[in-house]
Structures are given as C-alpha cells and as structure tokens.
Image 1: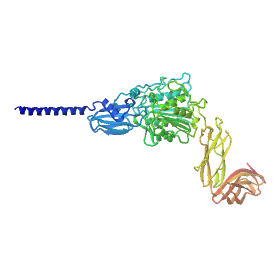
Image 2: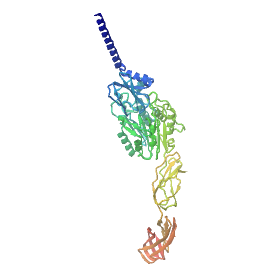
Image 3: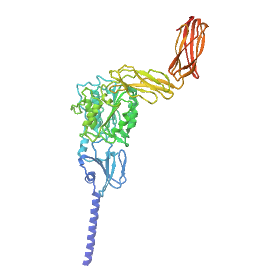
Image 4: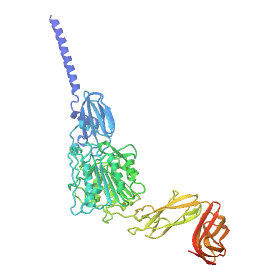
Length: 614
C-alpha cells in the first residue's frame, strides 16, 4: 500500500512539473515581444546598432499573420506570423525619398525579417511613433517668418510687372509635409516682395493642399495661406499636377519677351534611375523632370531662374539648362543624392543659404554678403557660390546656365538687357551653287554693350559668334551653298555679358544650278537701253526683246536680239533700234533662255526721235 502511494505521488509530481514547464514555456513565447516599445528597442539593440535618439522609429502592431505592409512607393511584405513592423528612418534630416528599413519582429520568438525600401509607410497614421530626440525635434518645429526689413519697399507700393515667380511645395501628404517647407516658401516670398519689389499678384504659390483648412503639415497644423504676415492669402493653389500644368500654361500667354521668371521648388523628390528624376507633389502625385522641361520650353525669350531643393534635384538640370536660354538653374544635390534640412529642421539647408545670399541676411536676421564683385547686385552665380560654400550637409549643390556664364549677369532684380533683334538680312535672294554671297545686318544694344552675331544659313549650319562689333555698326558675313534649294537665313545677336536677342526676320534665298534672269534698269534717250542681269549659272544664248505698245510709233516698235552669253552674277545691256513716234507708250523688255524667263514693263513718252521713261 505504501509503495502504491509512493508510485502515485511520483506520477502526480511529474505531472505538476510538466504542467509548470509547459506553462512557463508558453508564457515566455507569448511575451518575448509584448509591445511596440520593446519591438523598437529590440531592433535598435540587436539589428541596426545605432543611437536610438538619432533616428525616427515607428511601430505598427501587434499584427496578425497575412497583413500587407506597403510604403508610399513600394510593397514591403506580407507578415508571416503574429508580430510587429518596425519602420526606421536612418536619415531623419533628409528629404524623401531616401533609403529606409522595415523589420518584421516575431512576437513569440524575437526573430526578425529585414526589408530595405525608399519610402515611409503608406498608412503612417496607424504606426506608433517611438520617442527619440530627433523625433521630438522634428515635431516641435514651428512655422516662422523671416524678419522684414522695414526700410525696403513692399511691392504693393511699387510693383514691377515684368518679374514673375512660381513657388512650389508638394509635401506628398500631411505626414510628410514638414514645417520647413512652408518656412522655405515664406522666406523666399518675403525676399521677393520686400527686397526685389515683386508684385504679390505676380508670385504664384502652389503649396500642399492649397486653401483647404484641414491640417496638412506633419505637426498636425494647417499651412497658413499668409506667407508674409500682411493679412492677405499668398498661397493660391494646391500643388497637384493639374494645377502645375494650368499655372505654366497660363503664364505662357502672359509673360512677354524680356520678362523674368523665378521657379522655386522645395519638399521631396525621387528617382526612377539615372538622371530620370521627379518632384513629388501633393497626394503623392509626381512632376517628372521631362514634363517640367516641356512646360518651360513654351515661354518666350525671357530670363528663367530655377532653384530646386528636393532630393535628386540635380537631375532636373540636364533637362532645363538647354538652348535657347537665357536660363540659370541650381539644385541642392546631385541627380543621385538626397537633400537635407538644416540641423534645427526649421529650413532646408541649400535654399536657406541661397535665399540669404539674395536677401543680404539670413532668415534669422544675420547679415550676409554674397556680393563678391561689390557691384551692388547679387547675381545668380554669386548666390550659388555663397550657398555652396555654406552648405554643411552631405549634399553637393549643382549649377548650370545657358548661354555659358549668363548667370553672372542675371539677378532677381534688374539684369542685363540683351540687344534688339538684328534687322532682316540684306543680300542676294537668288544665287547659284558654289558661288559665294555676302549678307549684312545691324542692331543696337540698350546698354551700348559690344555685340556678337551668329548666322543661321538655313542648311543646318551656323557661324560662330562673330565680333565684337559696335552697336549700330553694319556687319557682313559670306556664305556658299553647294546644293540647289531654298534656304531661310536669319541672324541673332548677343551682347558682351552674354545676353542673346531673338532671331531676326528671315530672308529666303533660292540657290539654283541654272541661269536666274532679271530685267534691271530701263532708260530712255534717242534709243531705249535695258540691263539684263543673271544671278544664276552662266547663260549662253539669251533671247531678248524690246517692245513698244500704245502711242504713235512709226519706227522701232520692236527689236529682237540674242545675247551670246552672260556670266554668272553678271549683266549685259541691250539697246533698241532708232525710234520715231509720238505719245504715251508702254515699254516691255523680255529675256529668256530655255525655261528661264524675265520681263519688266515701264511707262514712257515719245517725242519724235526721243524717248522719256517715266
């Protein structure tokens, strides 16, 4: 009996141990990762090994297996089991879109899966933000306006109607539309209106969701439509593609030759590979570099200044810095780099310094001197040089202009004015192949700069820039065509600083390989004399006729003759027989060879043996 009791006691004890062991293992599995904070700490300590306060961390979960996880730009994964998604932005001061990482952490085991991506979660509102120092700084940033110099004149008082600006911030969505983008716009807006006298109505602002009162910034607030604090709404449209197209298409019909247009973009950018880049707009819409280039290509011969802050923005320059110009463009970074905010996250780094150079002080009121040649004007090359030198982030600002070095004469204010379009070329309208012909033109420059000329010969050949010449000086250029055809020639001018004119009105030149006959001057006297001109190939055996109609003509009414030859670009004079008659007459001179014919009729009066051509 005692042995039996001992047996049962062992069985019961073993069962208890097994039950406790099973309960213990189950409890540990269920609580290995029990909340979002533990998931974040696990990833930071065991996977990426970074200072937690230097990154942005968001956690979604707990999630059941089979949950789809997506970023703004890509599908990330489907969760394989119960667990948490940890999103880590390792470059929190950079603008989107840049490398980020997603981690799935198994709730029961602590095992994890890593996925690399380039965009934040599409449903960021469902993620919990983990407290970090950089995260706290990002969401503590406030909208601010740069100080306004009270000694400057506001554009309401003295507007300049030849200067235009388009300012754009897409922002992507309210989670990623950071406060600094509004601050960037406000800073350049105040600079334009108070420092350069741009009229409010000439500054078109497209910002995030426009005038929608719903919160649209990452700090949970709405973008204030009043950028300069004067009580008027300055933001006009939401920054979506249809509005961008509408604004640029309307400006194409408004902006005139010689006007100035500034295009300023901030917020996020992304890349489709290589130089194929884009600006991100509101609601995740996109403006590609090629589409942007097509929009500005429709403008007349005006100065265009482009400043791009977004990631990969250097990829815009190869599309926009192209003939005919004049155009100056700069970007915060190369085509394969992302751009950064300042350390305090209140402004973007590059445009903060670029705007400061133009304003003469930064957004905090600290004096800035970017006038390197001390001429009192901040040109676009000077603004870039200053911004590049003071940009301390991991980005390489880019610059381009066309024509080359035109940025040294273009500013936001009064710039160099180019020469007038040259006069229509003067010279032969008909010619023969392999003969040289001379053409002339002239023009003036408002600032009396010396002038260079470039000729377009209509056969896809151009001269170099010829010169310099004094304003108003007649200039000459020669051309020989080696094929028959009709050629439209024109000429343009540029001044010493590099500002180009429009093309002249064209002159059409016919080049042939046969004679080109023309009747020149017809004169009277005791006989009629007429000049037969050949501007084409040599003419052999030219038939001519001088005929008198009307009036009383007793002798010499008609004379038919043959000229043995007329050399190319030469002339011959033909003479009538002696004439006897009286009264008003019409004198017709004809010349022909094969299918080439020329004729000219003039009025005259015969008094016996003498002819007067009237």
